[in-house]
Length: 298
Image (cartoon, rainbow, N blue to C red; front, side, top):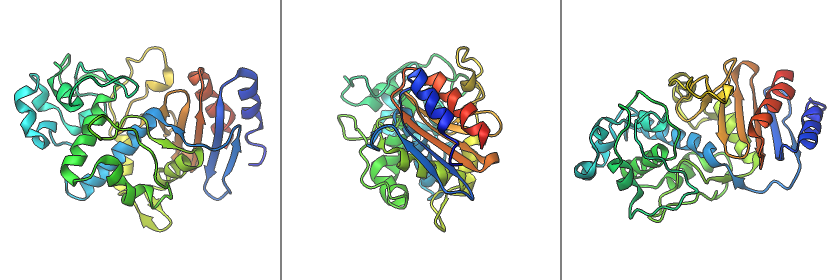
């Protein structure tokens, strides 16, 4: 695998794809990593959604909640302010972006509300829950709040002993809302090599160094319990479906995607995982280069 990345790095230079680093793990081979700048922690943007999904699966395995619980059953004090139909929204719909909410918020936007969760539940629905895919950080943020309510620990604190520490992701930063809750859908900061360990964990069905950190059944559900995304007209690789916090790709693969080219692609059929961090204004080109110049050559 020593020459595997040469063409990819050449194309990155020629097309100014903005890659910071790439890490390739394949079972039975030594990992390879190439850096184009120091391996600093960077904002993973929407890759954070996958970490939130894993936290949801862990909380479910501990009997604290179910993926199919209704949101308002965990925050009943918000029923009086909730818009019509919000009482039917489940945690599954929040994590798969199918809640039907009209609330569109991303972590780079200022939070004006005294409590963002109040604003989310008060927003009117523009589709029945479970019937429409619409990408937003609002759903994962609400899931993070439910995890805090049911476990007594905010999302980052909950994952520290269960996921971050075992993977040696020491003291990661995760930006928070004004009330102190992690954004959940974005703004988790890790190195390329650290994100690669998380991708490897998922490839290994939640097992790490002899320990089952995440139930294997939940890891499999992440890429098999999917919703339709075929209405996304301008990005073919986003049309194969969305699972529990991951994008579905061709040939049995699935991905974590973050703005500006943060990608972690799990390839079960090839027993491999490819992780890239970047600051790219050519995200689609970068993703295609990862597939054609790296994954297809494994």
